Image (cartoon, rainbow, N blue to C red; front, side):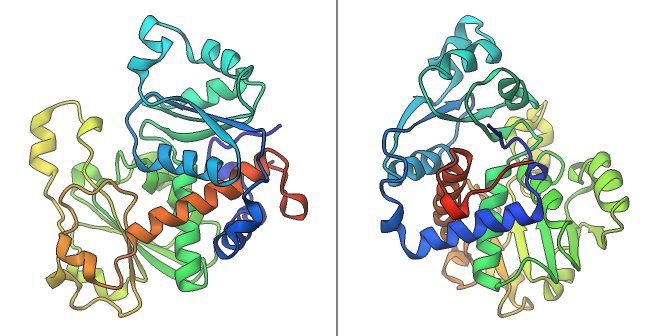
Length: 312
């Protein structure tokens, strides 16, 4: 039995296996409609989610399985003080696999330590979001044909953005990937990520507060929202929430084959007029997330046959 808590739980080879299976499902979904017959996925979401929770549910239902769980801590026994460890012990008797989102960093790790079923981290605080990373990777690979030799711009909340942290950790393992990290100084990437991942890995990156200046260099622009729920006070959120807004004028000097990604939800950081630009792929990205989560469920349950992997 294996769990997926961090993108680093997957080697590059294992990532490639997941992405290959996800693309196979994308092309021929009918071949996988009964592979999880009789299996149950528990979705334990201690904080709000639309895309991640529903895409996990859609993935399991598409595979012929069933879903149970809760969509907020208030509707679970956590409201009565039950611990994550006790919850997962109980859920292990009801389901075959679990996806957990929790506002506290490390909660899915605690769950994995006490679980009798595979645990998937569906986001823990500002730490990791590995299945969003899988979604990002399959989107980039499907549209560009590669995961190496890319210049990736990341814009917005890079301090609290767990999707950014997870994607950086995954992408640094591919050759010749460069990062342009665009944010106000208050929302720059955490020191540990800069020092332990980028500096120690001798990764080519720059930090800047200028989006338009670097737009012509980018193959991927990964936009993020400034997250109200991660701030300790409303004043700081209000001051920073409109730091970067992508509109049509800012795209004038971008490459014709650059792609704009966003983990969603969007607030106002991408103008709706950008939605009509063929380089805007964030809604397609959300669709790809279902296929890659299907591939992950298949593999963690050991149902993939020749596509199955062993997580290290």
